Image (cartoon, rainbow, N blue to C red):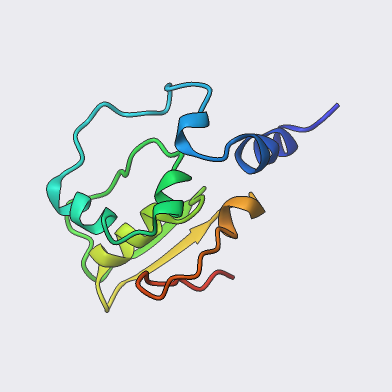
Length: 117
């Protein structure tokens, strides 16, 4: 018998390869993404965007200079968005338990690389 932890790692790390593979839309929002966020998403590598399995970005209206922790950050789409919103004086940390999500790799210098611990 597997644990919930192993089941989650298997689902997000092995079964899902892109957003279209999600087996439910229970965690998907119908809300429209604000245009300023869409502009930031355009700068995110397509592979990171394709592996976005989140529930939508939930954030307070003013993040400049804040410290933010994103638990379950997956491939890092929201970490990248938030890093743009907290600015140079802010700080964002993304944490995920699924190695396949955290280790999305690509070779393209046109995209900002975020160091992963």
